[in-house]
Amino acid sequence: MNEITQQVWGFTPASPTGEGGGEPVILYTMTNANGATVQLTNYGAAVVSVTVPDRMGKMADVVLGYDKWQSYIADGPAMGKSVGRYANRIAKGHFPLNGKTYSLAINNGPNHLHGGPTGFANRLWEGRVEGDRVVFGYHSAAGEEGYPGALYVEACFDWDDDNTLEITYFAKLDDEAAEATIVNLTNHVYFNLNGHDSGSVLGHTLTLKASRYLPTDENAIPLPEAPASVEGTPMDFRTPHVIGERIEEPFQQLIWGKGYDHCWVIDNYPQTDSVLGNTTLLPAAELYSEESGRFVKASTTQPGIQIYTGNWLSGCPQSKTEGFAYEDYYGVAMECQAFPDTPNRPDFPGVALQPGETYEQHIAYEFGTR
Image 1 (tube, rainbow, N blue to C red):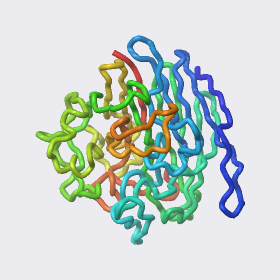
Image 2 (cartoon, rainbow, N blue to C red):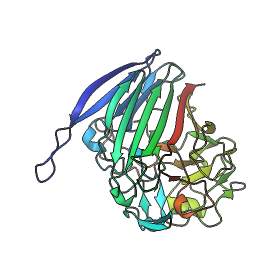
Image 3 (cartoon, one colour):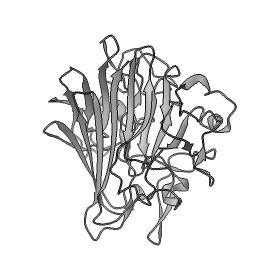
């Protein structure tokens, strides 16, 4: 049984014209029977902290974030936030749907990333407590960031006594007359299993339940031949590998990304043309630190997992520790999601949401020690 507390973390500022503002930003704290905690905020439906024990029982916060809510405003890393309408990239910001071509905001080189410059990550969501869970809701207007269809989204967070954080995303078009849209939601939490302020994660060990990955061009858009086998490449994590072991190899994919920033195809994902119909959580990844003994296992209903080794974390607004700054490779994100640029790839599991349909996807992060 969770104990959930709420506190006002601050208030949104007025617009430059003096309008609006004054809405409360809430910090929620979920504490399980073991005293392990998760903190969330309704700004960006974000994970602010996860405090769990190491192998000796010592507690530490193992996710990167900020101690001031204002630092979450338009931060480059999208720290711990729920990103959408479409997580990851859409090539040149264009996609076809039901005979029309839509144009989205360009905010990542020539491409659209994570729903645009504001997206869902930089919105104030409505928050509420429902029993043992925290639920955030957001109404996205038709045309927001260029997306068709008025959409209502919910992000539900459950924290149990086994130290598993489960995130469930729901989405539905507002009415039967709405235009169809595309949806791909994920959470952008960064892990450092030695503690968020302990430095590099290049010594962490990563295992992926993935025999294939999506090689990309220099702008991180999957190539026509994607997916490709990981066999014989530094992208092969089917057996455990230290993240930093091969990250500097002269492999073009790693050179372009300055490290790992790729989507892997989760093994045994159902061969279906739509991600809307799968409700089975499949194991996707395990991150482990020999130093602390902590691990986090990711499982999901999504077809892919983007591993991002924090290659551009330098220059974060701040951290949660005074005088400590996050640098490149100080956290690793494991983003369970649909494949990048799916709307332009009919060979990938589909992401179209039609009127009357409900989008539902689950991501579970299980923490433990050994």
